[in-house]
Length: 144
Ligand code: RB5
Image (tube, rainbow, N blue to C red; front, top):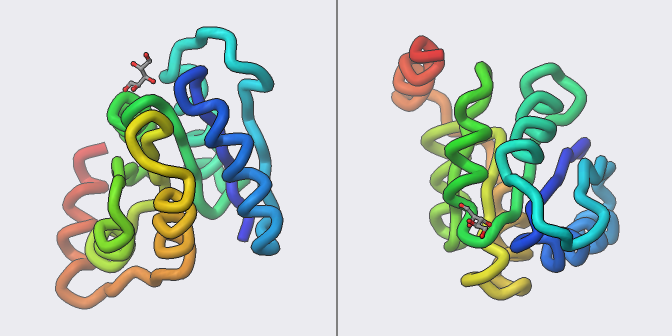
């Protein structure tokens, strides 16, 4: 799958590790930065990934900051984006099945790498459930 990924300084270390993990799983990964852990503003990087997804350059987006909260808030401002801040693999399944999330925002400070890898496995392998969820997601998108 074509995946766009970015972080801020707080998520940088895990972002690097998650890029390697995703590549090892056969994904086509565009690393949108940063390329070091100097202090940066997370909305700048959330916008790069969100626009990649919204404009069709990537099928899914992955963001990593300290908590994932700010990244999800910023990415969700881009029309076409349904961003979910996820710290648990079961929620990763549900954000796909129920909400058709196309961007995931992870915590690099409070969630272990192995847990984030399981979260990404679930996020990338779970299909949208459609059915009763489809109209609800359409109503989310009407808010754009
Ligand atoms: C940076 O200190 C921190 O605020 C950021 O990584 C993120 O957690 C924001 O939501």
